[in-house]
Length: 440
Figure 1 (tube, helix red, strand yellow):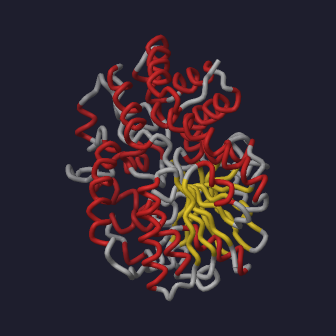
Figure 2 (cartoon, rainbow, N blue to C red; figure 1 turned 135 degrees about the vertical axis):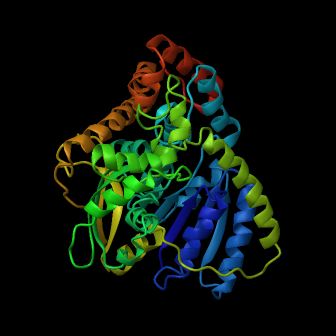
């Protein structure tokens, strides 16, 4: 039976979904599950919940907890699969720093975990940690697959795929729900079953390039017509993505609260009316963090005395990937992989792209897509520029590349002048202190 190691098991809800999914899967339920974290309280909470879920399934799995860096190698030793769901620096202090310091310079964010100055800083404090994970893996489980769920997805996965020497793929939740959510929002739910689609681009900005019904009819003309009508609804929350359909011709995978800060169009101090027009939730991620912390305390209190907790398999890719590799049964995912061999012709080979991938007993095989529509590739490149420079900064420890990443970030560069960007970056580096390595 495989050994599955979960890094960041204090992310209890997510650990519950992934390991719970494995316990629902015949080829995985008897696995050894090694859960690892540096927070003893959260690790204990996760262990108690997972034990109760294991009990509900008849205790098929073996669940072992590993606390602290000194026990990390043992958690990884002999693993076949490593799931990564860490958050370096947590909400307090690091997410607070990521939002509050830019705000002093007039730079507003919504989520700040994937791109923008918040995404850059999150990558810079996370890459050193996953670099250490990879070093341990090369020693104690060199053939394991590293399934990364941590953001910023393209920066972390791209770094691992270029520099770590381990098998790694990035996984997001947005690909598998993209077209279904779109059709349901537009009152076209009767066309969900049997639909055919092609999605490719980069994480959080992959494009729904083709969508057809079960009979092969192109659904985009009707989607575009209904999307224009939907934009007239003042209460509708997904307006940025629908504006993408109008302005760029295609829908993208991630939500509007994310995509509103990935470009220079919607959050603009000179045009404050756009915030209301597009229903953009400024400071959304800090609010979510506060609610999630409060919500988990309440949920844990309700679950902690239960000896048995049932679980139904979720839509998360992880268990399906592991099942496919263990059994050899083919499965298709939308994976974040290096653009090696120009899977997407008009994006650079060093970029981490999100494309269809075939999974089987041989591992994960990305599929060739070809060229994106030129406007979609251009939008992706504004994000890829930032991703590649942030990876370069993490790899070389040269501060100049952090400045350059921030300057070329479309939202940051459209709001602030170069000297202000440099001052803001310096303030962020100082505030993060020991959460970051020293840059020269």
